[in-house]
Amino acid sequence: MTDLLAAAAAELYEADPDGFTQRRQDLADRARAAGEPAVAKQIAGLRKPTRSAWVVNRLVRADPQVTSRLAALAAELRDERSMDGTRIRELTAARSRLVDDLTRQALQVSDLPAPPAALREEVTATLDAAIADPDVAANLGTLVRAAHWAGFGLDPMTAFPAGAPSPSPRKTPTTPASPRTSKPAQPPPPEAPKPPDPAEAAAERDRRRQEKIQTAERAVAEADQTAESANLAEQDLEDTVRRLEAELADARQRLAEARRQSYRAESRQRRANAELGRLGE
Image (tube, one colour):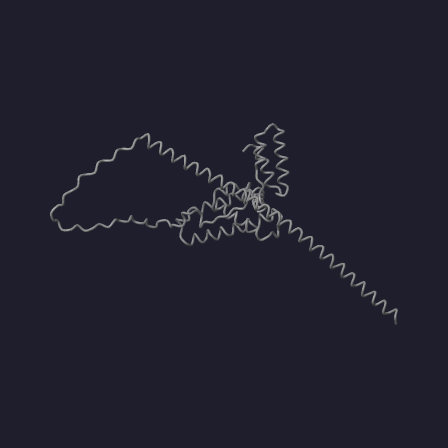
């Protein structure tokens, strides 16, 4: 990553995502004006993070020790298969404490002392996934959405304890030999198959390989499109939630003001009635 691109990414993923689109355009224009059209195109392609991803990004950029702390615990957990139950429980507890501590720190750094429960859960899930998934860990600081780890332990292999005996190969049962009698006549041996043509075999292997590549490329394209759609939907929903929360806060403020005015009006009404009663005596 070039210095110009790295600086743009640092600015975009550390700042509040509400102004992401305009900042991205400004930074791309600046790179283009500096004679770096390729970098400008890369900057324009940077994706807007969800608010939960931004919270994690800001934590990592504010405290460089976060990634090393996560990596250190991940390294210990990689030896999980060779540990006894006590050590596994100790590391599991350490993992929980670290994720909880970093979640609180992330919310403090982002000035979110009372975040929505869903946002807190996504931050926690992302930090936990960074311990288990190297791809998530590698993208800390430039995440565009929350991550989740659906496995157990650190990797799928931890489901099988170390030292467990490998399943023995299944033996094919043999039929006991019958008492020897007269030997039946044997049929003539089958004709040996014709060896395949090397050129045809190579062509067939290449054809199958190309089919697999095309299938994989289609799967990647579909996955990218699905991920992009999901990310946009997530951002839209977060924007809607923030708008509704702002509207709710405004409505509560107006309700409080209306109650104060009602109280004042009732007080004036009681004083007026009292004055009227006094004058009528």
